[in-house]
Amino acid sequence: MGSLDGQVALITGAARGQGRSHALALAAEGAAIAACDVPGPMSTLGYPLGTQEDLDETVRLVTALGGTCVGLPTDVRDRDAVDEAVRVTTDRFGRLDILVANAGISGHAPLWDVSDQAWDEMIATNLTGVFYCLRAAIPPMRARRYGRVVVTSSMAGRLGIPNIAHYAATKWGVIGMAKSLALEVATEGITVNVVCPCTVATPMVLNESTYRVFAPDVPDLERDKVLERFRRVNPIPEPWITAEDVSRAVLHLVTDPGVMTGSVLEIGLGSSARLH
Image (cartoon, rainbow, N blue to C red):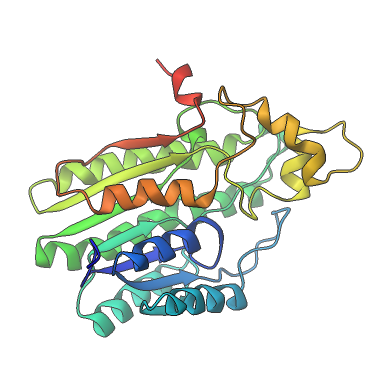
């Protein structure tokens, strides 16, 4: 018997990386999964986005575990698409117990070089997209007086970090939104919490664009050649955490009996020790 038997989880950004890991972790505990991903094109990113093939692979992997998973192509910037994903999920499974609002993008530039388009894409995905997901998912949870919501922020939502001001702005923003929502639904059996990972070894990080920020003087920007630069960032000298590290935190929050809400769980390789 799994700790999530009979429950239904909708996970955004589920085609790969952290989202795929969360889908597998929750499915292993018995949850049926609605995996949402496949955003429309974005022109300001230095790495490829998740694809339909990636989303299909997540569905395949969950199914191979013996779980139930439906893949829903969903761009979280599209309000109607998010509303439809929640509707399809509740129509198919009859309920929605868990939302993991995980979809997000990253970008790098000093603030004065951030273009209007880069700003707009970042805000639309990482902040407005989370808003759309929370707004759509809360009503079916309120109707059953039960829900577990986890929002993916970042240690960039807890610390100032150069060259990612627009990204950090969204990650600070979702923490305020989640804490406020937690208070609004605190008496209705719904918890709303936040995970703040530091650098995670996913395609959003393991790419030349990110490497260039940490190692601008390294001529051949390959993973092995920038490891040492990443190790300098956090007190615990690991270059990055894994998606599975974050999934353990997510699983902890969605299986909580209801006493944790409005909390921010930092998975930061010691960077939390720098906070007051």
